[in-house]
Length: 527
Image 1 (cartoon, helix red, strand yellow):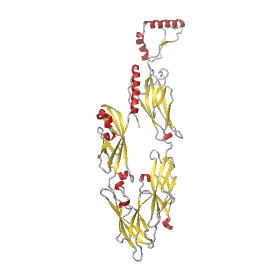
Image 2: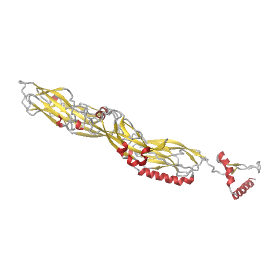
Image 3: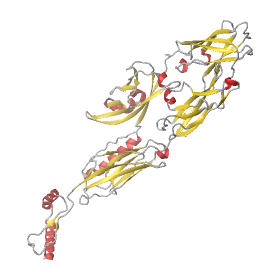
């Protein structure tokens, strides 16, 4: 995050001490001030474009901080992807219709963040950055999705010799809404006119539900070979929505065991430079059934977002999880996947487990250098004092830890960098001399502390302005020269030589006599 420092500047030596004191006071004030504020707002999904979200002034407490400056503040959004803001009133409104179910599928909490840059008007054409407000908008769910079963009807087969209280597993409904608007264990009801079956709801290892149809009466294929029951799912919204599935039960033989993962969850760490198509982890499940009912296939759940499924894929036979796209720690440092084990029975039974994938950082970003020169910038007088502040140098690195820590150096000893905890001051370290060098080509090189180290550099030119700081000197006079026409030179530029005539008028008489005597002695020596 860039920080801009505004400072007074003066070319008059008599005010240099005042300027230094003002600069020090300003830096202390900036360091001690609460520069960043926070504002938390809530907003319902599916509202039309232009709907009011809230006022960032009140939400952040800026009105208590700004005082009389409140009417001179302007507000701008850093991103503006989802929201817009009124420049003078700080009113945040939506700039697009937000679908929470698409944005945060399956997540209990959903939020969008942005930064509001607050500028204070100094004049009609000039402003300065006053505050930054980190805005977090929590997107509230509307009950806009009904529960949906994978199909409108399913067919189950059950062996006629199945014991009582045996369960037939079928797929539960899914609801894109969350929280109270979603599905819960008690969201299901069951209709069976024959009273042969009852519904049982199970909680899976990942917190989702699966359904079992429990046999409560003995089955006899010779008496009845098929049944039809209905499962109804009702969500928890204030105006509940429902979905249903017809289950056709055919009396035959059975598959009665869910696959069981060897662990309910898997935690894996990988480096962000992992090659594509390299196995990350292997999940494993077992099934107590035999034959096809015990054969298991693996897959990534359809509840996992499409973006994540574009990065990973699973070998359905081995249960190995692979990458099919490059990982980037700076983009996503952690992924959470739901994987499923599905047996080959009829109907198939399944179970779920979670895979948490932690991406570790590698040093793959070089430091970025940004130089903000302070007037007069890169044009300096050769009489400029040592310690003169020339610029602020901001260095950023998107990596983390040691890969993010940066050190910088200069290749010209006339200048120096002073560390300011996250940025540098560029100052004059040695007196400049226009007669020796009228310009300096300076290169700043910054390297991080990762392995291997990554570096970046930038070059700028400092122009040295000539000042009248050289006295005229006589050249050596040959015997052919007229003693009345002594030759003299001045290392300064022509304009400075002309200025000497004016300066001589200000010398006192005693200095003029001493110079005339010295000149006569020099002439006599050459004669």
